[in-house]
Figure: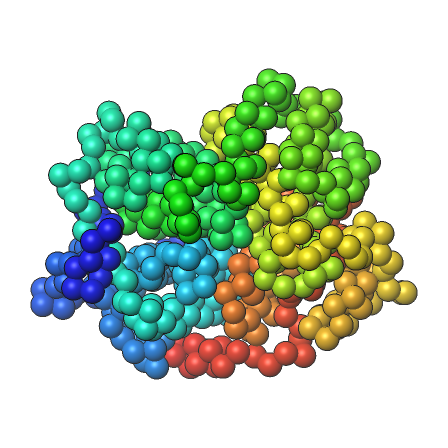
Length: 498
């Protein structure tokens, strides 16, 4: 890998033709910017001319002034979609995607902030996005301190023609070849349909357990953000993604046998044993509890084999997902922490990919990998023993929703018990979710606050009613409570936009 002017030469965008996918713009019109302001360092990737000036604004404005500058642009006509686009692209160009986490959360969290915005009332709509803008500036400064990585132009002469791009990309990814992959993904984005590209990324994002699920999370979140900002911005984003998916330490994984790679290799064969009509099974709630018990003790291989067995016995995939989401929440109750949290956010990402990829083989692979990964989260996070999510007692009586969130952040077990009593007692699930979102928007300070809350709000709507309440109750372990102080960014954002 070469360096240029202190910057790693990897990645570039030329602007990609493709369908413009739906987004959520508010008011039209970006203020005109002079030619001098739009100049870009030739050693770095250039974005499309209509968005480059706004990206430059985010990059070059100080953290102390950025929110006010963006608010000023919004008042003059800059749209929500333009801000979201610039936020993602500024992160992609300026922040090293390795390791896939840490400072790179400024990119990983963009979709979560967008979902939080969509879940918020009008008065709070900009709070998650402005929080993410500020977070980007912190990550950008950290990247500068750690070497000032910047996405560079792709080597155009190495980009394969459209008819060979898929074959070249697969060969490069299988060989863990960075430079070959960079050229191949550029050719793939330019010449192959978006859905085909997403399917490939889903497969490679789930093939190994390095970075505790962040590779799969980046696949899902980048794809989802592109659906809102438009596929014409895909090339730099997917070059960053491909580079992230190739991260490893030590010897080339293609030539080794590390634990992180074993489930993927095993499950590529195991998926072939699943019956052809596996998606048409029967909902059996009692089997969900049985599979949950397996996940608590099984090895990754045993968990994968159990998935194959249950599907071949005619059990619907929903039953397995119910158990896996429950197990992820249970880990957080047992051992609150970053590893247990990522069991939930990774399950969210793999479930999203499972629902939206179009190849049956990929869909089976993602299901198997999620089961295997949960056992690895369990053991790495030290969550093998403790509370049982399907058996803990609810609090006495039926509390008001305010009582539940007054307990959140103080006593995790008591908060879970009160949440369960509220939900089982007929309390509104939507009011619970709306309050959870509002607490994050007002009080959240970390990327994981947004990633986790956006994931569980979405996932709770995908679960069977028989497990949903306990799942949500268990997830209070990482929500914000009403007793916490509001983030200083809330006041600053409201003042800037007022």
